[in-house]
Length: 130
Image 1 (spheres, rainbow, N blue to C red):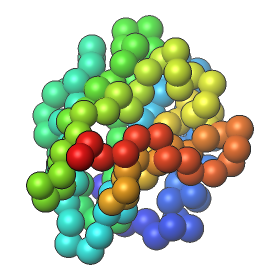
Image 2 (cartoon, one colour):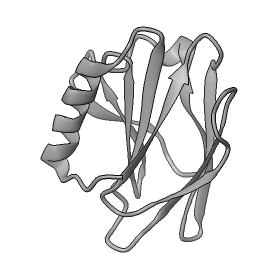
Image 3 (cartoon, rainbow, N blue to C red):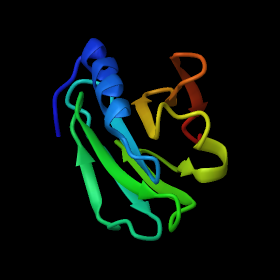
């Protein structure tokens, strides 16, 4: 895991998008919740290690998804008493909207934001369930 500020996050996005292969997608979750707030993530998909990851504030974790074997990466996410279940990669939905085979998620207190390549910005995709 690496420590990135806002500018570093976008530089990481650019560098990883240049290095990605055509058959695989990289899915990254970046914790931008609050100081001293860990994001606990447990994801499941074919070919993905189903372990739980505790992502520290301003840190990230990535998975490499082969779209030939994985169509959906579903994750349970929790911070404090807030929790939700999200499909953070869906091959049909994300193949054209992620930046050069890289889906970059930024998790905030109001929800999950995805960097949309066509718009060149983060956009709110999911809010936390109430």
